[in-house]
Length: 320
Image (tube, rainbow, N blue to C red; front, side, top):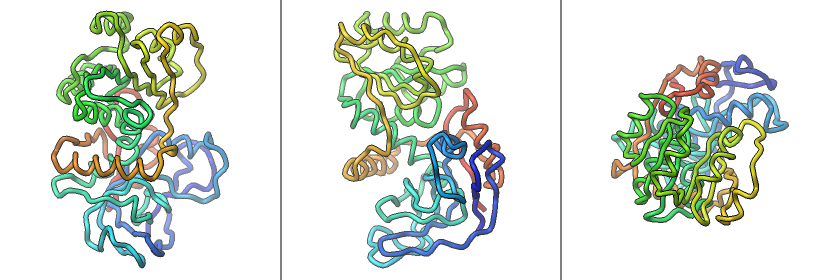
């Protein structure tokens, strides 16, 4: 089969399309014939070596959608020919076939495209974990989603809307802010504006927001803390460097800064979120939005695009 392979850490040019053996499912495992692959920023960090040592060669990726190709013994969740999405791969998803434990393979409703199915895993899991497992968001609370026009941000908007949260969202372009309006965000701001933090506080009658989802903590965390309400929480989802904060900003409001790492979710939490996500897909409450599509051979360009600013939605690779 065709697969993107990484033989050494480096820039996007180390992503090489090669022929490798087909995976063979063992007990409880599923092989999926991949139609589309979700590209996530974390895969660029792994490729560059920022996440530490890794055996070479390896195939990147955790998210995909396609058709069940084959199953191992003791698989009861799916059967060959089923439309599915994969949210967690054993062999990597930048390939024609991917191997996964059956617990990571979920039904894909007929009205949801393979591209949309590939956009579910990391973005929706991260948004769900940040909002509900780490953030303990509940009906009626307010949430500020910083940089809400990317894959995780849009997933967070849709999940927040379904949970009855008051949504504050920021976007860096007119098109992005219009998309956030279409997605149901209640209050939308330009995070390039020098007054956006004060504008958000004004909208809350200077009470602050209950929860902030922060995608770029090295830029925004110091500005986030004064925008929190009493007992408010910042969920640090992403950061590309260090940041200086004033700890006193957490004291008067007894606010929290909490890290979010999807790998920290338990199996029970994972199962619960995908039960909710599949129901949301079936009911058309959750609708992944695709920004750009690349052929599998253009994985290097996709890795450049996923880190570029102002893309609206998810970047996917197409496998033919």
